Amino acid sequence: MLDKLAIKGGEPVRKKPFPKWPIFDEREMEALREVLYSGVWGIGGTKKKEFEEKFAAYQNAKYGVAVTNGTAALEIALRAAGIGAGDEVIMPAYTFMATAVAALYVGALPVFVDIEPDTCNINPEKVEEAITDRTRAIIPVHIGGRPVDMDSITKIADERDLVVIEDACQAWGAEWRSRRVGAIGDLGAFSFQSSKNITSGEGGIIVTNDEDLYMKCWSYHNCGRTLKGEWYHHVIPGANYRITEFQAAILLVQLERLDEQTERRNENARYLTNKLSEIEGIETLSQDSRITRHAYHLYIFKYIPEEFNNIPKERFVEALRAEGIPCSPGYVPLYRERFMLNLREDKLMQKLYGEKVDYSRVSLPVTEDICYRRGIWLPQYVLLGTKEDMDDIVKAITKIKESSKELAD
Image (cartoon, rainbow, N blue to C red; front, side, top):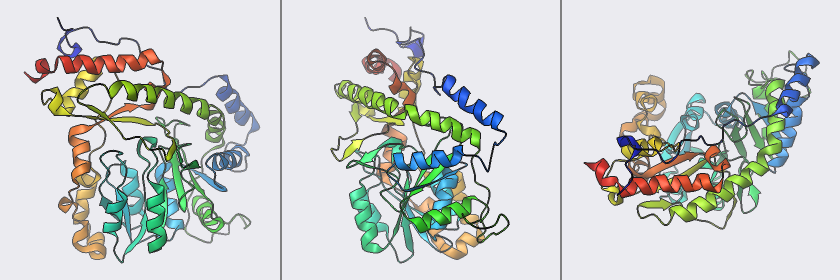
């Protein structure tokens, strides 16, 4: 007799929690005390600069500018690259709203292209098809910490003289052909928000190997000042996007743990992938030898409803959560979000871009299939558990599959 599903009143596969996030210890406490008693909590301290240098080096970049969040990092990167009103920026719609919002904040138009079904990353062929005489930049998003095909993206950008701004807000330490993402394109943006694999509650950073872009980013994030200018010497209309010394102090300690945690996530992800690949109706994303390191902010797999008695994805997620497995159905396509649809009422955007601001006209089949029917996420902290924890995920999915007729009734 099959075990009764937890969603139907049975015992869940798992009752104990997965590892708690964030992970911290006395080292963070000591770092905070040091800043507290220094009396220098913001500008003028040493922790922010130290973190900028260490994180930039960690990502194989020459320069880093630590800012308030990942959205600000993307916005400042676009401004530094000279992207503004009248320009088009190509990006996927399978991403957090910040990718599009950053472009809108500088007056540019997000142009959405479809993703690859086996990677959930932006499709380079669709990027090429979307280029117009107004295209100025490409924002490849390393979704879930999986690097985009940067060979194809940089080739397209070089041939068309486009700027590449990597949205690496989920991809700390991820590598494409042994090169850390974020510093492969012209600029890269990272986030340190609460859920992220390295966190200070909020925060972000821009990295680059271009000195001129670095100087512009630094100026934009520090009220338009220059590195060697006077305090009240403002050369561009910048703003205060600086992080505090407290945040930088925490991030310096968090960075010390990142390699070990990343290796643990990768090891558990490999184990989980092998196990899940044995379940009919569950598909894992493709393996690619060019990805020499995955960050695994998310573990993404594909659910095939037809193999589960056509149970809708939302019902599968509900049942999996009931079995004690944290999971999420993921994004809605950005062009279906209300803030994007409302742009057709924006007179300035209409004047600049005409009918292109009517996102109700956009339809990307792969993105919609992943968003509405197949894509499932497991959060990064799940992968910090044990092999037995991974087995519980497999048991829960297997249990749901074996009792899927019960859910379908």
